[in-house]
Length: 80
Image (cartoon, rainbow, N blue to C red; front, side):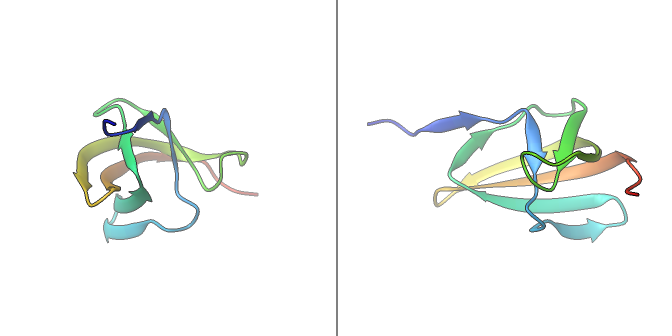
């Protein structure tokens, strides 16, 4: 059986993101996931929540059945 891949068209953080720099974040997800690189993508806390903003994914790393993405937040939606 090959490596199962999941294609993700948005970033779901579940509050687990880590800030690396002012607008640069890292997030580790279980399993191997494909993400579009350098294309504006929605960031949400949960799958069903409203968008928190827009990010550009800079780097995707696969290891030990996890996917680590590094993304830059390019716009932030204000929460009321």
